[in-house]
Amino acid sequence: WSDLNLAIKDVGHGITAAEQAGAKLKTGEVVLGHLKEAREYAESQGARVMDSSSMYGVIRKDAGLDFETELVKKRDA
Image (cartoon, rainbow, N blue to C red; front, top):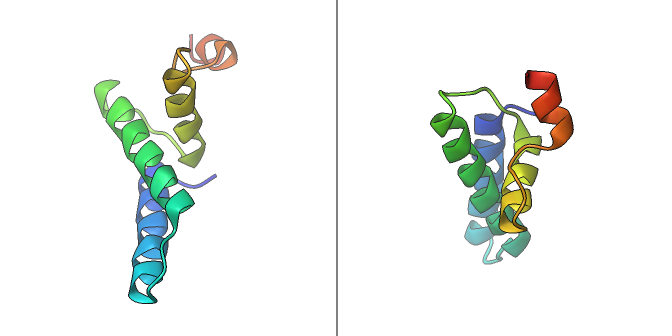
């Protein structure tokens, strides 16, 4: 896992490189959107430090679940 902001930067570089080559990274664009939403969540939690795996919290929210799993809630309690 990498730092969330580093993941955003790296995925962004991949998307830019693909665009410069005349291609599109649709999956990368979806991932970048999720990573940015995860960063917004982290900022809403008092600039909580998160890694790239936090994008799964966004996927959980889209599915109607809490951002954090029960394991994470218990760990951070």
